[in-house]
Every structure is written in structure tokens, then in C-alpha cells.
Image (cartoon, rainbow, N blue to C red; front, side):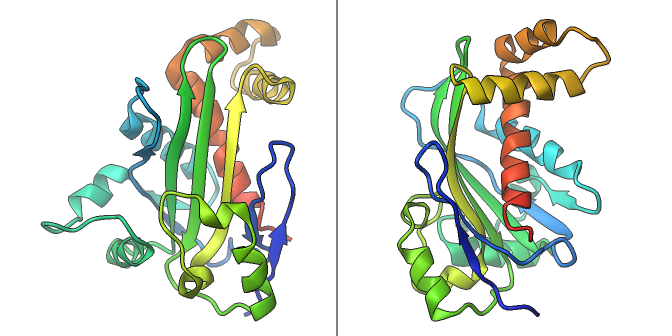
Length: 223
């Protein structure tokens, strides 16, 4: 097994994701998508629907099987929670997953143009050893300090990727990505018409956001 190194990239939004360079596709074949946490105040969205939409986008990656949030809940024993890395690793082993994806919704505005903020932790079920240098780099990242699950030094070996992002349709880059994504979802030559569908229909915008989250979580740790 090659040594894990940590890739620290500075994004336009000011977030610093953490992700090993090691390509995980050979070993990550089953991913458990945990029920989403709602950290917004007064939002009106269905966190379970969002989690299922993201799971469907993840399924599109060749060779990956997804354990959906409803299956995770069904597998919980009485009094069991998903509040720590130990908890989700235990559940991941129980459902025979190689990795777990934990997400918290940090901001949500459904009105056109919509906005979604999300914090993501993509974790291995089986921890891998990391160097002290890589650990120090992890601990200095803002992404280490904020997320659905509290992180500690001894859990660093579980990390595949940690990041936060905001998908705001006001933003020019997000709107450009949305137009490109909408065009790929239809045979029509009119990107504008179908872009409007993604902006106006909540589930369609969540589908777009899910595709971006999956791509970033899955590809950010590639070589």
C-alpha cells in the first residue's frame, strides 16, 4: 500500500479540503451514505430526500455499490447513534461498506436562484497509517475543525476527503457548471430552458449539487 499524502488546496470559496493522493477506486467498492444532518435554521427541505438524491448520483460511478440512508437507519440497534467516527465506522463494518459519506447541510435557500451549503466527510472504514507531517497538515486545515462528525488525531487514518462548499446559483462559476450539467441531462440543444428547470425545481437543483459533491469527494483524492 502506497503511503498516504494529504493534498491541501485553496479553493475560491476560501475552504481547504483535505484529501489523500492515493487512488481509492481499487479498494472502495461499497459506500454507505449516512442520513444528512440539518445544521440550517428554519430551512424547509427534506434531508432524507437530499441524501437519497446524492446516493443515486454516487451509484453512477462505475463499480460502486451504495448503502442508502434508510438501510443505515434500519441497521441501527436500539439506542445506537451516528454521532462519532467510531459509531459510523462500526455501522460501516456492519453493512460491509469500505467507506462512509457523512454530510451536513449548513445553508439552504430554495428560492430562485437557489443556494446550498454542505460540509462533507468521506471516511474509510479501515484506517490507514499516515505520517506525522501529513497529520500536522490535516490538523491545521479549517476543514478538519468543521464537519458532521467531530474529528480527533487518532481518527486521521480514516480520512479520504474533508471539505466544505457553497453551491450558490448567483455565482458565475456555479451557474456555468449548472448549464453544462443541465445540457448533459437532455438531448435538447437549448441549455437555457433546462437550466431553468434545475433552478426552479428543488429536487433538480439538489441533483446538480449532489453531482458536484460526489465528483469532488471521489476525484479530489486521485493522482
